[in-house]
Length: 318
Image (cartoon, rainbow, N blue to C red; front, side, top):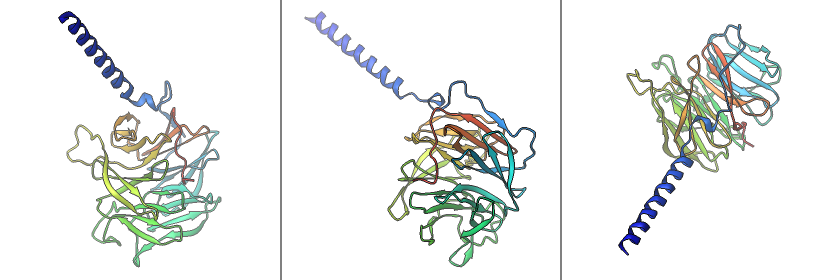
């Protein structure tokens, strides 16, 4: 009887250990979950001279648009590998995204406004230029929701003594054009993106280490602020500034965050999958390509790409 009990107990313990091992293995995730096999970083536009690249946006038609802020240019990278100037004199355009009408929307940091461009690059509409009668500081990045509403960040990376706005904040432009300030408790709000279903809004602050998440209400108002993830910092960092900048989202809900360490990838539960190393410090990223599975990264003077297993969310949401 005693031997039988010992045997049964041993079998139970063995079964529990096997179950725990199986659970750990099935819950272990890393970059292999999202990177294509033998994926490597590729530099695009080799030989071209850029100064500080930002704002990558995929048009869904085979073209990637991105900005060179100091040089006041927007470039177009086509699927054949050619890179050409799309627009000069961009007013220090930064973040880009296409809207439901196929217009390229730009955060013009130099003029403190958000504008819409026609296919030839001509500005055809000013979507946002002031809040409560005052110009914006320097619109930085944006994301467009299913209703045609637009969230955009408005930090100031220059002197803060004479900022037009009293806050460095996040704004929401409703589909009818009304501008609302919706987040005002960040130091330097920067990258912004929505979850695949549009129910969550993610925002990073360049001057801290947190990815903040918000539930989105029916009228577009972000609520229930919470820390979604804590970003990894440089080993020699003397502060909690992660350098968090741009965001991208894939269809599985994985979030891509450009930081001083590279592109940090975080799963839908806020767990780190790893860091995609880039030869230069990355500024922003987006997912596109012919099959929708290429991560494009703007990194200082270089444009880079790496293949993924999973497709990216195409914005604006539909």
